[in-house]
Amino acid sequence: MAQEQTPSEPQFTGMPTPPKSERWLLHLLALQLVLVFVVVIGAILLLRELRALDRAVGRFGSDVATVQQKVNELEVRLDTVSQRSEQIANQVDALVQGKSAAAAPSSLPPIRPPDLKDLAQVPRERRILGNPTAPLRVVVWGDYQCPACATFERQLFPQILERYIIPGRVRWEFRDLVFIGPESLRAAEAAACAEEQGKFWEYHRGLYENFVGSNRGSYTDARLTELAAVLGLDVEAFQSCLVSGRHVPAIRESIQQALDAGVQATPSFSINGGAPFTIARAEDLFSRIEGALP
Image (cartoon, rainbow, N blue to C red):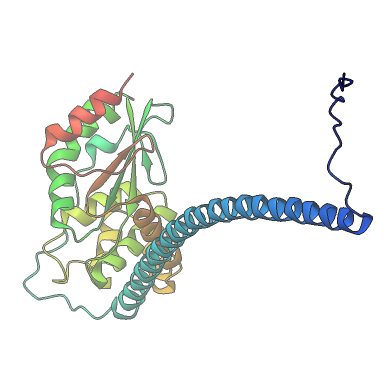
């Protein structure tokens, strides 16, 4: 009888181990794959950063363009102001050069003394008229050849004086804005010379009282001196002042200050340092004063 054979247990053997040289190549390949992966990821991240940087540069460029536009606008405005100041300076120089050019027509009426009764008891300090502690300060800019200014002084100012200045509710200040012609400057100089003798307001009223039209000879040196005599000024001192021209720089400064403040017409007004304004009728000024009074 044949002897049974017991099947042998299966023998499991692993894959044959590669030689050492092959293992080194596999490690190198794996390392290369890792490096490639790292480079790809780095490139992706760098690309994202570059895109973000590009967007930021775009926004910055837009902001720079906006700033540059603003700078250009400011430069244009500064050039405009500079040109305007130069024009004013040239106009004043022309006025200075031509201030004695106008001749008085023979048809002009004689100098009339102004009515000063309502000014007699009003406190004044140089160009400021009224109670120094009044709650409101009103500034008016004018030209002695301005027809609207003359109408205001003759018709409306007496009401202002009676309603607000004499009762001590308003201080009133006059400032020069000379622009109409050579006689405007000469009249402003004469008023400043009268101010030296403490009679600015008397002379101021006398100028408007004797105004007969722009650049028609109202304010020749002869007529200005005659008005000084009528008002009782020291005529010799007045003439010396007028000939010297020493008040022209202050008048020029007053003009520039008015322009800087935004004054564009005469008469213009400001209350307690506020923005300048003009009026079309008396009620416009009354309502502004009443609205500002405490």
